[in-house]
Image (tube, rainbow, N blue to C red; front, side):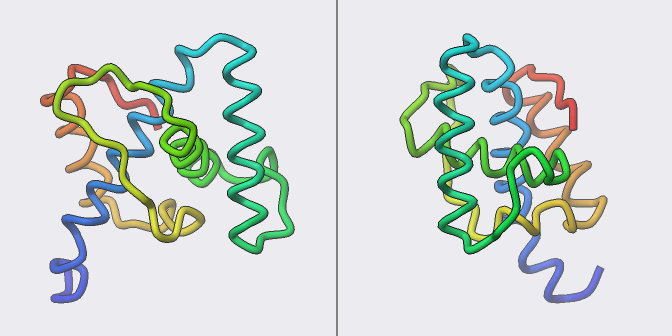
Length: 118
């Protein structure tokens, strides 16, 4: 891991935690709420300047946008000590290195007893 990767790792870990928690919360919503969140995520994707559709994105990018939508709408995650954050580049989260992903997964499991699925 280079110096820049080392320095940027804490923020990236928080962004990955957001994606993992976002998927967990989204999967527990009612069908109606999932549709509302999906529409909001489509709007965020449009504001990102992407001409793509949410369904055509890789899972990680899709759940990054869904996580942002959950935060924007104000859906309660129900987890003590967790706070929604902004993901600056949601379409790039999938490219974060394995160290970041593994660290975030273990933190989510330890801190919130949520089994990360991505």
